[in-house]
Length: 213
Picture 1: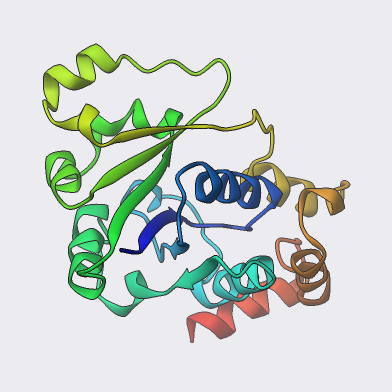
Picture 2 (picture 1 turned 60 degrees about the vertical axis):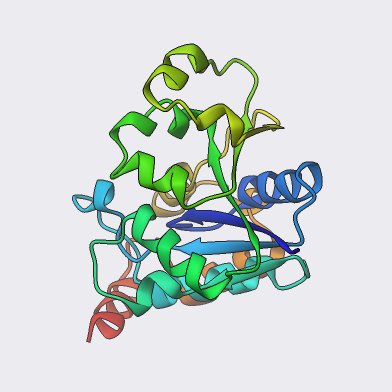
């Protein structure tokens, strides 16, 4: 049976930290594939300006093109929002009925799991949850289990390196004309440079308008 990892995010832009974490998850949990689940507009980020979906999809394709285990999924953009994880997992269950579904998340997000939309349904619709446990992060598993009695049966911890890389910081570096080259792989860097993504220039604003139209 195929072991299928689900790695969701806005990936705005995708960076080396994403690649390393996805690779560690694939290795440590013996995943056959990792679906990079690109989110159109996460409900918890509706107040933020997010780069158009098509632009981010092209960046993810460029980022993962040389890793055969990684695959971009556009499934969340194929249905109307809001795009909740529980609903996406229901679609994935139907599409990959014979696969073991492993939802990947960070320990920081796990601490907010109580506030996710329909968290119990999420647990019911996955086989395992791979939690990227970074040095220094702490999760109160005793309390977590008291709220979700079946959760520990599904948790698989992933030893993840502490990487101080974030998409927000990269966007800010680009916009303020600071160094950012080595936070990204070569293909993503070239695409951002060529298309002037994240720069406070007219060309990027035109890209946003064109995609919206």
